[in-house]
Image (cartoon, rainbow, N blue to C red; front, side, top):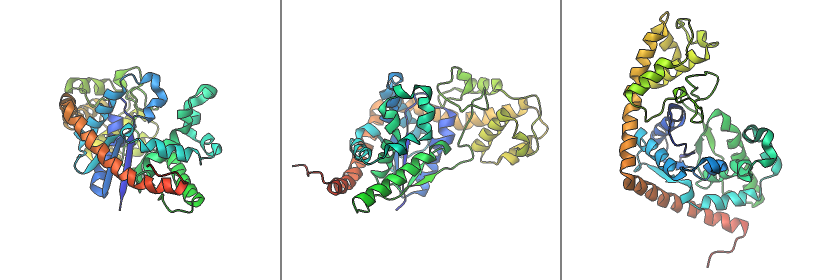
Length: 334
């Protein structure tokens, strides 16, 4: 059985980078996999607890974005991480096996802790262990990740093997990373060298899924470009990060390759190109934003979907955790 586990931090305003780099891939995987688990990883968001004053509403927003984008709650299990306590239990068991040396090598921890490493929270260091528990709890065979998280999947696989060897039980499979889509990394509209992010001060740096048609048009019109016309091949974009980013977005939305886009607009200035990409965004993004708004207004329905999803996830998790508890020697609950 192909079972995919997709985990996404609740970020508040969901932007185009979230959609093209992650959410839309879940819609594709829903058609390809036998079982699809979509988890809003609210516990992971707590590594920046002081910045998460709207964690509950952000969790609902992320769930709404998945459903509005085409995730079917009847075909996929959509739930909040904190609603399945066994994520934390398995994470603790893995924490008691994981060598500190493995965690100290994690590139993301080094980058996020930076010079403030001594004051960084334990949760930030242990983040990959909880991430491993998220996936391995369900015996997932595939996990969608960005290029920057492949190292975390390697840790998952190492932990699965370590547990199996330590307890002489073949309880955990080795999940495969899934990196899909032509636009897995969408950059800022103001700086082609920086990833599109909610944390950017300027709202003009990103396309939010909740933006209306006028806002979409203004943001694309103001998007940074250069003075040269569009080249006839994608190779001509290699030293032009802002132009490359816009072409990448156009390609992802239209289903065409970057070379096809360049051939279509070769020699044109950006005004014509921007008009077309604006129309594409209005066609693809506007309906998603409108559906998110509808779902959020019908809050009880959205909460019901998450409740049902958590019930289904808990059933799967309990089946596996009974074997894990027995393997590590825990006393059965009386």
